[in-house]
Image (tube, rainbow, N blue to C red):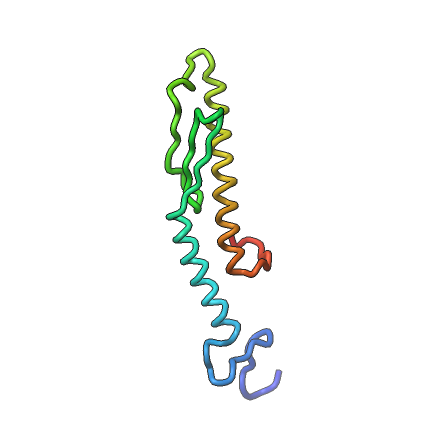
Length: 119
């Protein structure tokens, strides 16, 4: 190992002028924009229905279930299983649409880079 000044790990070097225009600055800006976008996703909702409109689920863009509405005519004590199936279908579709909304909003930030694990 040579004596003298320490070298940055793995070839990372400071940008001339020390400005935030380097990769680290760009990553920090991207991270901040992701956080703002995720926060805004909490204000957006998706609404889905199942069973011909008998069940309605509302979910935020960050996958928080806000409500499930069940039409009175969907409640049949003789067929609780069908009601359960409709609720599961509505919630699963709400999750899928919510994830699709989040992916759409986040892909605008990454320019379609397809970075795994970001959302």
